[in-house]
Image (cartoon, rainbow over all chains, first blue to last red; front, top):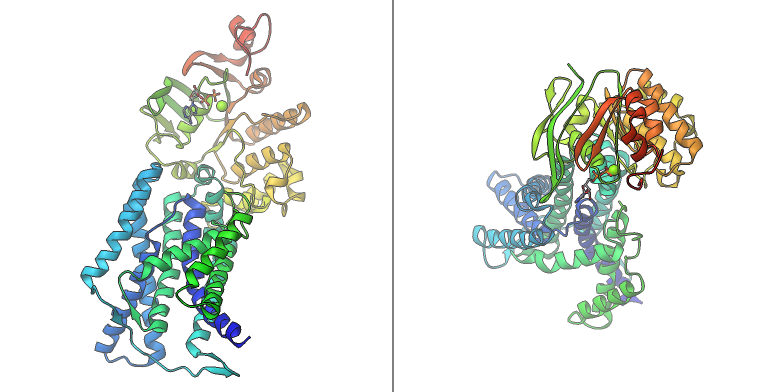
Length: 299
Length: 242
Ligand SMILES: Nc1ncnc2c1ncn2[C@@H]1O[C@H](COP(=O)(O)OP(=O)(O)O)[C@@H](O)[C@H]1O
Ligand SMILES: [Mg+2]
């Protein structure tokens, strides 16, 4: 039981990362039916930009840990958001009507970002600053670190904020409309390219947020860090029902917890096998994912 | 000067040309009908005018501005709104959200436009909170027109608004279009129901295979032997009416 609870805590932490990244996949898929294979690398760029911001702040002798953390997050999210828009503009927008070419373009964007990080930063692991020791909690044998609580709670807050943007604002209404029928949205005066670009921006900021917190949580980052987690977050999005925002959140947390439990009861070497085995079973039973209904129209 | 002027419009899907150079005019305040068999190019013509399709050549002028190179979302802001074939309502969103999307270009939803829409279609007021996909076919058509009116158009393009509706609803929709026109909105309507369209419109164009085959005042066309046989089902039909 202790193992289960401890792994639940760890799983919810990692699940927060998966969910935040999965939202970017699912939003882009929901509105333009594109799997943005570069999204995992956008997350990696977010982590690196956070690291650069911390380095810069140290040079400027800003050393209040809370201020540093917040600035790192905000700068990284803003810049990564713009980068996401740039990827859309350069790699996807010219090819929106060429389904196969756009797939190649996505792989190209992914490799460009990965090896851009490789060249600009480093081919080896980089160490993230250890900014502050948040007091954790111990409940019996289970320990929850302060950082885990921050990751989980702030992740939930961002997910809720995204949900409110999509369902309560005018731009969110435009996003949902163009997910249903792009030409009909154009006839309402909606500039589809602007709304899609904004979707890339929002998804990329969430990924950058996850990237910076990943750095703080694991203390190290590498230029390839987005590859596997990108695949997993994509899996989480499919698991929840791709195109569906609550589905991405459910899928992310579920995948995180399954992996945690698998690591706890089998071994961390087997965790991916066990977790993905369960995922395959779920998808066989529910091919459209847990919350997916039809292939279209689900934001 | 006409409100809408279309000159030698050529539109193609890939290598297949659907419009081979059509020209038509719509004057301010008119109702003009566009008739033609299935596949004649009526929908293609409307989609090109509203900017959903790029013409290969030719020109479209609206209210003195050339619009054939402008994106669709710009054209609607100029006051030219297209109610597409098949309605294209946002099925998973509420009636209210559909109407608010009609007013997307405006900073806030214009109350006057909303009031007018609910006066024209009282049923939509009752169904404001309902998900649009659960409306009946007639109500969905009303919503498509209502949503277009929320853009406060000067010119309304209507593509087969009576398609698939029971006769009583067809009559209601046609009457409402006449009323919208009386309030000052110019209308270019594509209609399978040629007799209703010729009664509603002052003038009409007949498209055949992507070309304007006939044009003139509705009364003249209604008497034309070719029109009567092909589109009004009088005498031996030349081709099946789609
Ligand atoms: N999306 C499309 N792709 C290829 N050809 C099309 C497409 N839409 C229409 N067409 C062709 O263009 C011609 C005109 O079609 P359309 O404008 O829909 O006619 P109408 O509205 O008068 O029935 C037809 O031959 C039709 O097959
Ligand atoms: Mg048609």
